[in-house]
Image 1 (cartoon, rainbow, N blue to C red):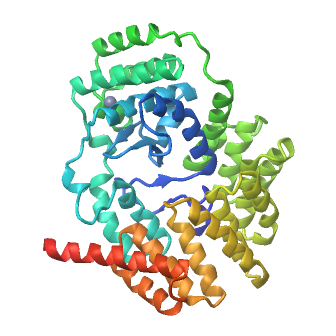
Image 2: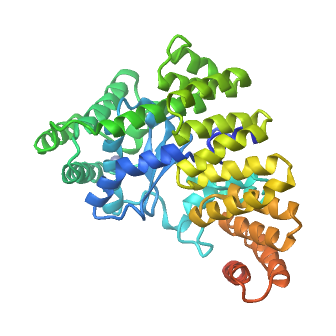
Image 3: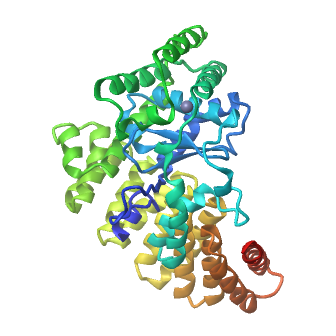
Length: 447
Ligand SMILES: [Zn+2]
């Protein structure tokens, strides 16, 4: 468990995961790419790239969906099935159309409950268990069962038609060609025709299509001045890297080695194989691939990150420090990479490294409010340095993030009793105690 947890920095992978469960994959490089390739579309849709989140779900079914709020969920299977970033941009443009159209395919009951648990925190229930949250995580998980059904949601054909038009408009405004939109949808439609609808084509289930719809879409997209504009070369290059890395991470090592044979010395193949060898329990081979990547681009923070992760997770945390420190600095303190670095500092079991771990993890949690694993690490290092009050505050933060109000109140109150009154940490503990306390009393009133 621990081995895989850090691999996609703080990503969640449960071996005993039930078939329906979906987990969020978090990876610094992938998130940066998804952000950069969708920002112009989000702006074109009249939304703010700061507010809209593109969340990657660990699911091989080709799908993308919205479920209320400004979040677009994209399955890892969609990235794998796409031949270009431009194809994924088409999918994202389409989903943004569902957001601006106010199409919410789930009943409000699940999302506007007084507990205010969003889909994201429900899915994070998986992370709670992974991070040792036990029972609280299981409760969130049960709620998440209803939410984890992107492939069961469906829009009407009318909604699909207006969403297609919106998606096409966003692409045009952003100056991005709609060729990928069309090729991807065309590909999905052919699959539907050839094999009939299976779970693999769940995008077609949730977004019903027709020949007529494709014809209208083709006409609209081809009329855009951006139609013949080539896709952004830098984005496409980053996409090829991310797709290979993701393949190495989610697929079986056998499949990865078939798709990226050892005779292939490209960056993509090495990236995919670094993960495959690591997953298959061949640290020396994984390390050799990572070394080759770093040799090619010594300052690439993501290559340094994978190098450090492999060392950390094969039990060599002290050696992981240099590449992870460089990756953290090179990524301007990306919170996911910093969390892995903090984890490595703690894993050295060397007290001299703990103050740096505290510093690095504090920066990480300040910049990323969706990372219970970082709070878990921060709590651990506080405990190790004898600061049980701040360890309690870290647990309170993590519990409140997971919707476990009882733990949040108890730990926040303990923190308040042991931290100097009116200091910033004390005020934060008071905030959590109050918010979580209100959530508990709201819950009681409803019963
Ligand atoms: Zn749709």
